[in-house]
Length: 630
Ligand code: AGP
Image 1 (tube, rainbow, N blue to C red):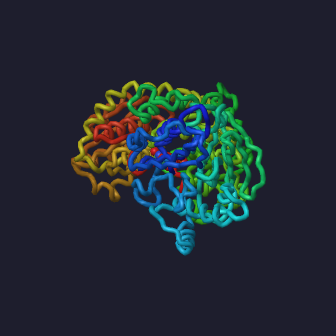
Image 2: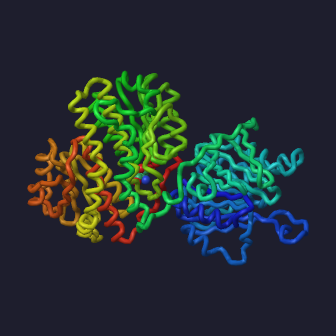
Image 3: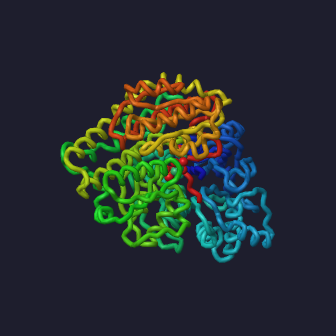
């Protein structure tokens, strides 16, 4: 899941637009980067020259690329394409970095996605005399397009669009590509599965994997659909067709995003900024939906599928990573309040496990980015089997938001930090709203409980703000666990907070690279307790609920084996601090909503341990923000 950016216009220096754009997309991949600058030497003299394309690629992030580009390079180019990479085929290196150019230098392109049948195409090309300089599937695509370009040259000389169209018909896999050639001024874009947005600016076009590199120049965006090809002609006109050359009228959408949202806002990192945005983002998710008194919850997005949900024998929730943990909290809340059985599956497993889906069953897909290939493919499979699709999505206009029959946005705002924080609490708040709505409509929630649940959920943003006001104290406690001797961590909880133990462990793994596992506290003595010693700290989450007593015993079992214990408890708890080495006290709320509070200290703890160990919390190694390949 790489990031691609392109600029075709007259107002700005193309490399500036593309380099800045790649910086904004680095959360999609940051192991190598590159740009290709197309210019016509003739423009600087009135001599008749063809276009020239210069490629600059570097291992490392966009900064390394920028520093590697010599001063002498033609910066005032009006056509530039660029790429920041998350390696799939071939190690991070200059040779495997994009843009890739075809053997005879006719085609230069950047690509986000995976060409699954690249080996087949490569063998064919080798028979045709092609040689390859990289290990990538993308270079194979560049040569396959060149091969088509030459094949059709006699009938349609210089028809790059047709060459791309014919080449893509032979491609199996996911792609978003920007293609240029010295032989034409046209710029070709195409998309299948991987996202591609085209910003319509007053001087030209800013093209990118998502809107973040575009909003600086325009808010008018076309989201290319699967198997569509767009052509920019004469640096000014755009034409969109499908793979069979049938013209398509472009749909221009207004993007509700501003620069301030994609800057760090004075914080050291996007992750810390996003952790601190949660009082506001949780409020954004419940605002307008969580009505007063006994009024119905206002969730217009759910109405189209409400009948199916209300008569569902079972609800499926599918997701990946942190979103899967939100799905588990959703399962607990829906089963508790609506008494509808919920099956939660990893999307990548659900996709291929031949699930028993009956027509009319509802499949809920939870996803921050709305582009996660596993979740998208699993939802597409469920649809083929007659399921109704409901999306809980953060990124507006994303593929899964457009795929679902109905859905709700979590309104968490753009999340740049690779380790998801505010999007997670937005997802859990969305699940809480869904569970209350279903429970109330199915008559499982009486007036008193309804009012109590609504006021408790309404109190969450302020309670999160209260926890964040203790940030310095929480970071100081986390400092007790930053020593690298602590290389294994256990996160333990019961009931509603078990998914939070999983989420806390994932956060620590993602950004500090320490080994951490979340477990139901009751499960500890069936194995994980073997890990316990003075160098394997345990983080217990034990709010004052029905499971409290049991978790206290589990904590004592750890202390009995000289394990170090950090406990997340409710204010007023005096027992846990007599057992644990460190306690963090947080406000109380309804038991089923506690995950919205217990996760906050765990986000801060993982942040502090990672930061103290010198890790880049916004761009952890080997990860990317949205995983657009299966
Ligand atoms: C979470 O911090 C990670 N970035 C990752 O596990 C993420 O939750 C997962 O890739 C799912 O992404 P999505 O919510 O965008 O679908």
